[in-house]
Length: 373
Image 1 (spheres, rainbow, N blue to C red):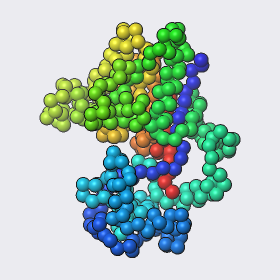
Image 2 (cartoon, rainbow, N blue to C red):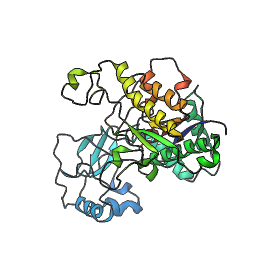
Image 3 (cartoon, rainbow, N blue to C red):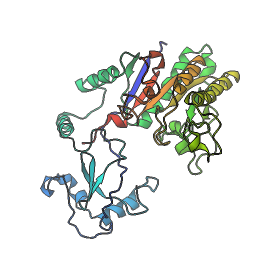
Image 4 (cartoon, rainbow, N blue to C red):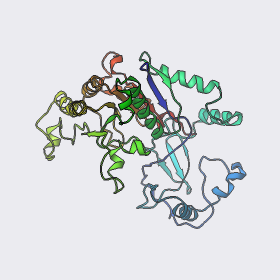
């Protein structure tokens, strides 16, 4: 099987909202009046009849319905101080049902702001034409795939899969890595009977399917649902140069008993990469198969942690020397969110010449691809 490089994006229009409060006090969430301000959302007459019942609910009813019919596992932001009843948004602001405005500093989906007129127009037009799956030919899907591949040019990334969520994208990435190992291994019969190993980073989050939970310490370590990682998963320390085991700022690390005496960025990169190198060696020495190394170039929920320069270069070499593939999770960090580069995996070597050897074998993109109309 020819080794190809893949891009697995999420396609759809979904939004989540984690918001930063303004100093302005909001009215009580238990307000009983039915007159709610709809800033920037048009008039009551603009609301379609199919949504009229929803928009007529008062905050207390919204909260009661949420509590009664939506799982408690689906958390509500700021529930400890009064949940936010967000009705609509515009540009960088969000508005609640009382007309209060909030600066949206933590939304991980709306890459172009809220209620962008061109996006609203495009989405409205397409919905008026057709909304179907990718089993039919359509110019939008074909052109989007081409434009995604072009964003990685001149890298060898060339094949696109459209899926429904970041979790599904990462789940599929692991399946692709496994399929590659099955088809390229000399021990094909044995390979199909044992799951290839995956190396992941402590504090990482790659999704909430069963497969991606296994490589997501951020979620895996919460609660008592899981007691140990699967035998084919190796977790290595997060390359945190501020509070991690190998800090490069001793003035900050003096109170951290985990910090070593290393002080340079290069030393920290070597030290953190050594954990990945060791994991690769252990997998090989045990006669096991390394399937993949997965990482966000700038860890998001782990604390927006950027690895020291040369860390990724060292990890990629170790993983590929061991026969594994490198999966870059760009679901939350891609499309220029780190400023000086399009993809977070490029951040550590953004000042270097474009080196296709550093290009991931598989890239997953998602939430930052979406736009919030």
